[in-house]
Image (cartoon, rainbow, N blue to C red; front, side):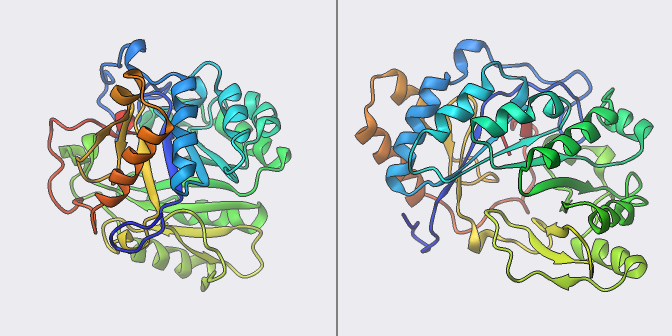
Length: 327
């Protein structure tokens, strides 16, 4: 199905939980955020019913997010159930990597194709500080296990933050020379705690990150043949085993190519991450809606998808943080 701006919509990101086992400083406040009650979160049966409705309007790709998706009990069974929906041809997970090493073989067997691991630093003490207590050794274990399991591609998502990890961006890019990793640099976005005082002046444009990399490692070659399901623009260092991607939500809006919808853990269908419009699927599900009813809701969501995001406007302080939406 195409939206009113002729963009094909074939990708659904599903948040399976608002909870997380880390407390990253740009994602949530020090004390975390109040978690939703268990009854407010969609059941796996409800999620599968949503997927079954989604494929009727053209959804073919699923990404599971959180919070941290791997902390939800039964996540492997959910991957298996989604994999059994015939029309779905790609299943991915975005994770902080803490639990990935011990679960990746089972996830791959259940049908997982790809994984993105959030990693903003390679320094153990710095990682511990930005995540408020995380163990980076577990993340490396997860990344290596994902490569060994044959997931392709294995991506690293890095938020570029001035004064925090800008001295490591070149080293992160260097990983692609020796490892089949795809390192993606993401511009810091003014969402939730990233819009707080600590983040002011810390934004780095993708163009500046690219200059840093090329100034040390040499000219990047554009990878025009890579057409992922997301907004990244890819390049490669000559002779590298992996690629380098840039996600430029601030400096270079990618809305014209957006192909996705988002489902929050509480069952709200969101046509755009950076727009407050939501459609309540949970109420329909728990009110006895069938696939035809859910399909009509999907069509309404696609038709209401805005031409562009509202990220350049202030993110209101009473808005939910990213872990509650499932970015």
